[in-house]
Amino acid sequence: MLAIAKRPLQALYRIWFYILVAVPIFVFFPFLLLSVSKESWYPQFFWMVRNLWAKPILYGMGCPPTVVYEQHLRKNKSYMLVANHTSMLDIMLMLYVSKNPFVFVGKKELVKIPIFGFFYKRVCIMVDRDNTQSRTGVYRRAQKRLKQGLSICIFPEGGVPEEDIIMDSFKDGAFKMAIAHKIPVVPIIFYDNKKRFPFTFFKGGPGKCRARVLEFFETGILGEEDKSTLREEVRTVILNQLTDTKT
Image 1: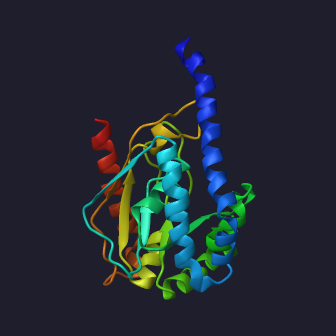
Image 2: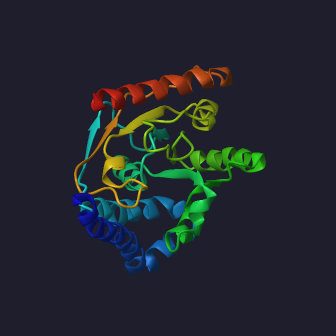
């Protein structure tokens, strides 16, 4: 009975999220549009999205973020950022975690989201996971971004796992790319996003959103044959922390 009574509030909570997503884009639309008109202006776009979009959404949802850094990102250095994928809040929390400008690699279906999709297709590296040619093109576009001094962010599960799965298996792409470009892999843990804003409509609610940046995995001496080992080592350190938190 209590669960049914809470449903209208949870529905309002969902609606409020989409309002928070849309309003800053409308308000700052001219400046956002200008900043995506040239690739060299991407750092300015990133600053606006991080500070005028992601932060207001997190705090506006009643989900104040806290981040523990076991190792800090250095300014003007490129990284491969990877994290467990749990919620739409993952995008905002990742933007909060890293002051270093980075580019998301994500599925092309997100382009269909009104307003958000307009900018998504202009600044993110889109991939059709069912298309081999599309996956190959990701490496070429990522290389271009890395040469511009940006970092790359990939959720290596390739999607959000079923609700009863703590973390799904990882795909090779992020680790193959990190080795090819000799950039550190930065494992990041999102502890609370699934509880705060899951994909199940009548679930979620305000509360803290914790993240932890673990020690980096260096790739300088690794070759492509090491990608599977690196993938499993990164997955294990993230999964162990998530499992320890639940016990």
